[in-house]
Image 1 (cartoon, rainbow, N blue to C red):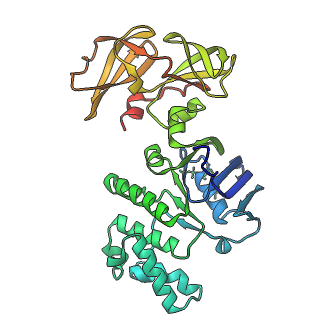
Image 2: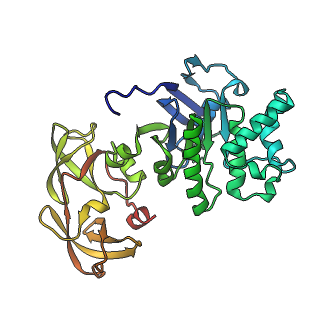
Image 3: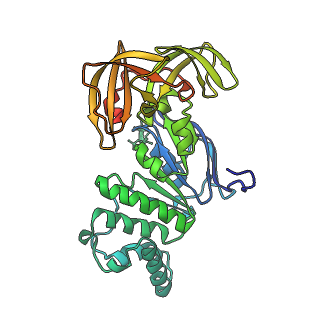
Length: 371
Ligand code: ATP
């Protein structure tokens, strides 16, 4: 943020939230803030507590302890129906026997608004999601993406302060999902609302978010802009979850001014490091495939090519050195090295990154990097 830019206004603040379901401690003390007019994603693997956080904000679950305040008002005891929050679900949950207009206006009519106001607001919401021309169709006459747009219109029609989106695109095919990502981001900007979107797809999180909250087993592992999460993962867990990074065990010898001296398979490197990295603590060196080259000066690692995958714009080469497997992105039209050939993989220590924690066990590198 530029120095003269005002700090974003906090819309929702959560402090030390805990939630258990019987013996399962699903949320184990999380703090976060959602800024007004922002697109935030909760990113993490299945079961890490993402949906539980949405349900706590929506008022469908009550926290065991901790506080949430929305626009400065505590949410304790405020029932779901009285929270200025709406949820869009993965299954669009449209009424099959009602047309698009009736689906969108249903809640407003139920709340007792006059017919004219219902009609005006419904038309506005349908315009926002570019569905006004399909106002008279029934859900079965719409594509998945169009049904999702109706579900969005229904969720924004009563002007919530926060829209909660629980894996809203997961039922769509890849092409439709990409198109809807652009539409969702565009809709959020045009409405100026705060969207909180749950996903386990890092590409989706990158495409949409002003801010990503990465979760791990009921805790927040890291929160930041997509670029910060990608370039400066604080832990090996985050580096691994967002995919594509080569992670090697590293022994930290010294830390000075944000740079760590580490011993790793490449020998001794001095590289920028995450704040939690310290001498005597477990650490990993993160080497992005696009920052490695297949031949070069020291620091380098002698390896053998074990896989080559054509990816359109480049080649993804897997090079194996003893117990270590490295993915290298080889850009350019030149043919890639042959499988079985020897290479000496070079890394630039200034482009490497030291994150806290051990590398995860046996990541299938090709699967992680080629998606
Ligand atoms: P997914 O991506 O699979 O939807 P998630 O990150 O949204 O997962 P949650 O649905 O929040 O995770 O679940 C967190 C943990 O709480 C999981 O271990 C889950 O099994 C458990 N859990 C969630 N809801 C309940 C419930 N109603 N009763 C018991 N356990 C629950």
